[in-house]
Length: 444
Image (tube, rainbow, N blue to C red; front, side, top):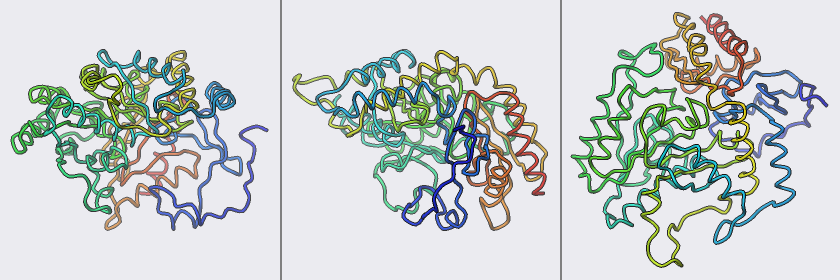
């Protein structure tokens, strides 16, 4: 049966499923369902096709239901459904680790597998703390995040995250955490194409934090090179370089959270080379397996890994891991995804489409309620003025209207976010922004 044919579903009992990051009561009054997907599109139960403008959730970079990935998953599940990763493993884990190492910036030597971006971040934070302890600097326990950042939902990642609405419901999180200021000032940056010229000085706040707490207590700084979920906040020119310089001066590890930025989303397999900055640790997930199977990966530079390799050979160097670390089916999906990206040049695709994408996004300038537009790679954010007393409702209504017109464009707060599969064609870029333009004009 064609994937565009209707896929009728039995009467839906939606009560039991407690949905993540969802207004459950509102959603369950009128559920939105997808029952199939193909290429650039989702398919709804009645057969209507929806152009995917957000790559699922920033993750389906190679397009939906790729036969190579489906076949690799099925073949591996038939041959090896599961293998433990504590004191034993399987060949695919080593093969994927080596493939990622080859794609990583120079100096990266080892990969630690997990099941999600949240776990990749918690892994990175634990490695940073363990690194300093292994070097006799166990007093370095402080972690520095940034306002408006998103680093997943584990206690570690949430503690260094800076989106207030995610943190406040849970009260106390990890101690010994501080935050840099976010990098966005609309008065200075509105309608910038790519990296803003203004704002590098905001990295200097790290020096003040160092002076306040004493560098000898700080283990790591973690930032998203481009803050994604909060609204595509693009780093000012020179900002990331300054963070690297300050971290180097004080012996602090620098972690880049590339869960969204990696695997072609900005430019190349990883985003850090595009910005000319090499961190000590990189976290990744999402596009790693094209969203087909949950997986995360934390990559470390050799000096970080080698700090743990001491003591007797029988000692466990890092007491950390997950039941599903390096799961064979996930590794198969990851290898198939990397093969597609290399073969089809998807890591360079954003570079090819960058200016066309940028022009399409900025064509919305001047439309009703649009107060800013931001873009980099195949990422874009269209920020809307909020409705009086109803923050987030204008963008959510635009999201719903776009969906009814056959385009999936995400809303976050009062910002419309676009992050399509990298296989998108120019005509589909036109369609996404044309539909969004029509919706914004109709809402005036």
